[in-house]
Length: 321
Ligand code: ATP
Image 1 (cartoon, rainbow, N blue to C red):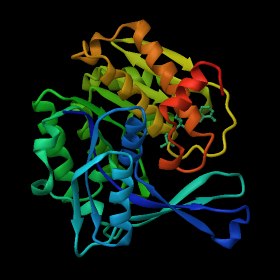
Image 2 (cartoon, rainbow, N blue to C red; image 1 turned 90 degrees about the horizontal axis):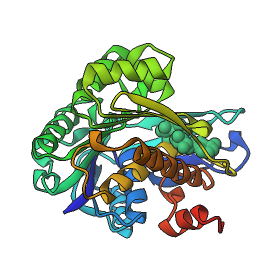
Image 3 (cartoon, rainbow, N blue to C red; image 1 turned 90 degrees about the vertical axis):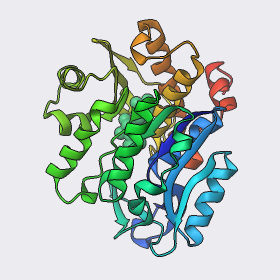
């Protein structure tokens, strides 16, 4: 059995290195939101597996080794012998804002097809997690939707973090239509404020989250608010749980650390069959924990390398660090 299986992109993130923006120095880090989530979960002691596709090249094989070094099951990772591993470059402007350029025309992650998905693994998972990068193009879009449908049919909880990257879509309308088409499967939805606005055209999180909950029957909606923490809506009730103060150096992967921490708490709760059974006290406790895990991830650089260990989390909670 697995606590969490994630399906989606696995790629190399080239992060800017050094202080001179014009030097174009980059550090190659393993990345991809679903993989970040699994690494964080694995570091918290959860059993995890990854489903996706990389190129049969140096980057692809090193990504497999990275996942395995965190004890993530990679039997669902497929290698393409004719399409290369996706590369993403992160650029920082003078004010520290991030933008991305993707080398993915196509990238191996987009070529996962539905016959390559290991449904036998999905069947053994308590939680299935996915995003929208695997739905930008066919055949990975159909593969993702079939996998989600399968997980739902076998009673797994579905966690969805759209992680909108508009430049990867042929149009904003297509992005919206496809992202929305997967919402009704989700038990847990995590979005940023910008993504909530993109989906609902509503900048008030209270109203926007109510629209999504009513339209798609979502049990739990989490709207991350950066340093401010997180807004949640559960069974018609909502609140903001404030973030914690840390020495932030890089927010890459903070949203993924947040999702992982929520899924960790839900996996830990063996009595929970349905997210709607969560009490108000418990969801507040889970979101506070997730704010701590996500904040700790911002104190180090990168996505995967910044995920905190259980010891670091516990030390923080005990006030030792
Ligand atoms: P992505 O990682 O894709 O940018 P996101 O937009 O969801 O995801 P944020 O809202 O920036 O990410 O952050 C997610 C969570 O990380 C927040 O809800 C909060 O708990 C924590 N966090 C982010 N930035 C900070 C910060 N500067 N200080 C403390 N906590 C932070």
